[in-house]
Length: 136
Image (cartoon, rainbow, N blue to C red; front, side, top):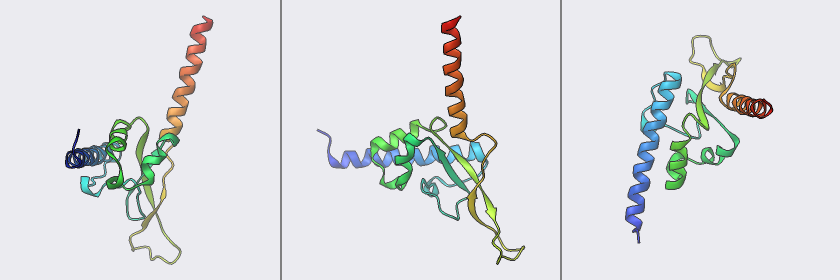
């Protein structure tokens, strides 16, 4: 039987691993350096990134990274670049803000073809091609 301490050690190891992998993923996709200890699933207005994810992975992003179970952390790590991806937030200038002030990051930039839309498009293409093969 696994002890509670052993489970906590495993969870801490997975938490560290996920943070490091997410940090690297943000850097590789967006060129933004975020310390692993500062990676967030629930981003706030000061974060320069947000997460675009498939609906079935939404439950992982409803909690803080430190609140996830070992199983959820494993699921999160295995979903990198498959079920979710970071996306840029763009600065939004309020009407009361002076032009030389830093803009706060509030809006998520919509890429030309976002991550979830691209996966949906690929699923449709796969289905269409499978039908073509069957009919051939």
